[in-house]
Length: 188
Image 1 (cartoon, rainbow, N blue to C red):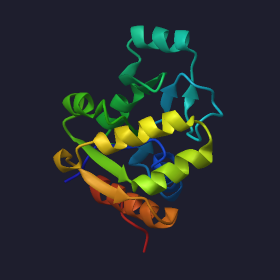
Image 2 (cartoon, one colour):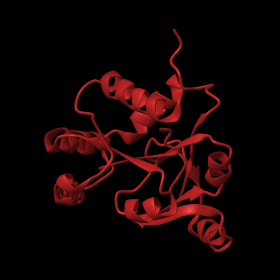
Image 3 (cartoon, rainbow, N blue to C red):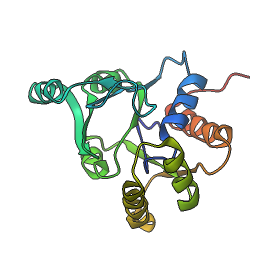
């Protein structure tokens, strides 16, 4: 079975951006897989994610014009996935997006073929990564860790990728999952 929308989620600091960059580089040039950029109301050089930076006014204008297939608020920023994903899906292309755990149920209603991919990391590794990146205060880190613990792991559907170790190991797992669910054949 071919899955059409691969929706990657996980705690901030779990390594989603690094994993998606790894998979995007590995699958570069494959005609039937694309990685959607997110539109975010934060600076282009903030966060390590390859995203399209918009001011809050630009974001709201695009939202009102219905230029987002999906959009949500999180951690003081607005996030959107452009309507271009619908055109890609209509052409039979598998689309990989960096999603939101809180928006997952809504996204699954919009895209019944959606496959959630949960990037999991231990609380200890998550704490180390959040502290190392230096973007959050100590209280913000504690709030993120509490939010991470509150996710009901037993009620999740989809695939899980552990990202506690080397990027290559989890990255290869994500690449294999995308290949398996999109029909991309590895070169011999």
